[in-house]
Image 1 (cartoon, one colour):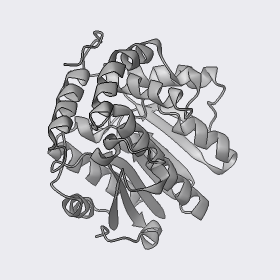
Image 2 (cartoon, helix red, strand yellow):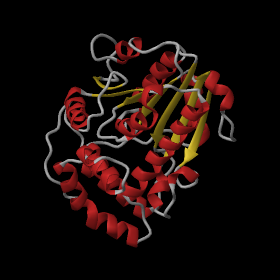
Image 3 (cartoon, one colour):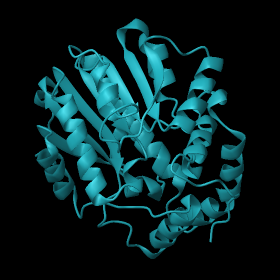
Image 4 (cartoon, helix red, strand yellow):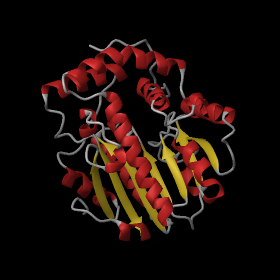
Length: 297
């Protein structure tokens, strides 16, 4: 069993995985030190023996999963920006992700990047970015409850404040595992509907498929991960085809799933954690014509 320090839980509590993930990115050179936290360092060290044992047994590590999904999402977003289909990004449930800082630094005035999360995490992220001198009118942080139907702090309010003439990407990383099937499909419908309001739309997210993780070592890993976050971890859909069909059913014009242990952007190291994750690529409008692959629907 994984033993971790106590962290307050509640509707706006900061997840241990958000802090652990932030520390993972810092330690692998993907982030700024200001986006690491003392709690994240504590969690990282607490999990180190468990991850080392899993790795020694040929099993997955949380680091392998996190790094694979992050690098693949980065690669797909970079491709869309380079192709000229995206010039505006909303990262939902951003946590301590360094992506906004890195992409805003790289693209400057050519990109608008909005990070969004529940108020406690948004405040922490806003403070960190202010210390990094990264906050501008083109890189900002918004309070957001993605499950709220409308009003202040809702996704519809956030989207209404964006440039409707700009190709837009929505990113979620680490969010779907905390949502039920019904919540995931509702969020996907909300995202697809919003992206149809822009000339080109791109949705990128990680996804754990329900049909995977049956190896005994992986089952122990999954149980430990659930204990770590002190809550249920939800996998979704039995196959890539079922997930792609659900994305199209939610309103995306085309959908593709990238497996974490096969995509070149992941900089694969042989960690079995990469095989536990897929990255979704859903497109609307003009962005849809660029999508190719056997898993597209």
